[in-house]
Amino acid sequence: MTAIPIIDISPLLVLNNINHNNEGTNNTHNAQIRKTIQQIATACQTYGFFAVVHHGVNADIASRAWDESQRFFDLEPSIKGEVSMTEDYPYGYENYESLGVERSIINNHDGNISTRKVEKQSFLGPDSKETFSIGPMNSVKSGMPSRRFPKGAPPSFEEALTQYYSAMEQLTRTLFRGLALALELDEEYFLQEGFFDDGHQCALRILNYPELLNYEDDDNKVRIRAGAHTDYGAMTILKSGGPGLQLCIDPEGNDSDKWIDVPHLPEAFIINLGDLMQRWTNDQWRSTLHRVVAFFDKFCDDINEDDEAPHVYRSRRRQSIAFFVNMNGDANVFPFETCVSKDNPSRYSPIKASEHLMQRHLRSMGKS
Image 1 (cartoon, rainbow, N blue to C red):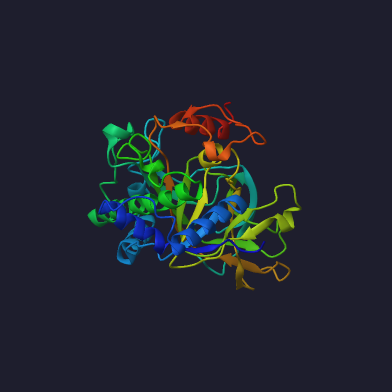
Image 2 (spheres, helix red, strand yellow):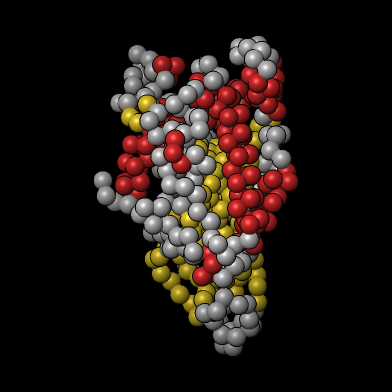
């Protein structure tokens, strides 16, 4: 296995139109829809990852969100930090997130590229990224805090993220219809009231991985930009700005060959299942371990005055936008009947979606 599936989901857009016009819900007779559903089922069972094309997302909305995100991260730290993540507000700006991954970098103190002497550092510390997040529009029904944006950021930043969030909600509905049919459920199963409606708890996160420099002779050959982890919710929809995302197909394998690269497809979205979906499917579908690594190219031979110093390599700035699909907090989650049998009995007891998220969060913090 060397690449994740790339799936044309345009047949699923037909389902959106059919349901909008109240023309019925039994559409598995359509050959194109059946093919798409089978591709999704195979991808979820084998990888827990797939890329979607012909997805119906307006390219201008995605482009504006991308450009405004880049401009936001170029702002002064005092502006970016006006709305920060706290215990009471799980969104906002963050630049100290740590998943406990060791890596080596070169620090030239002020962040500017120059040919003067730089200092090598190895440390166990934060992931090399900064983020900004927003939650649901309907704070009353979702039970989540109202959205906050930095006052120093231009109004176009809030407008762009709000539009992109809405576009991701619509793409989520499209994908949920395909996932439901792949599980032999009614195509509206995930979209029923109380599961995924205006009370959902989805989060949008923009990410910036700043430029890094590194020594050629560093013993740590893999430079981690985001540590290995799984996502907590139902699924994640990712817009990536370059290579670096990897997934782990064989957790027991050798480190050199268990990670495979997720291709960078500029017009596609990368979909990965989360822990909640693996639980819901009784482990029939996968929530796969993944990480982000840095790719380096040769930067400068004479960045150090010392002739014996090794070459310096640069990992360029990387950007991405992630939409974390979380159900309504009160949604009751237990294995689907289609995923339970005499040979594969239910492995999980019922749980509220919000309880599941809290349990996973506490476990990641070492508190459970």
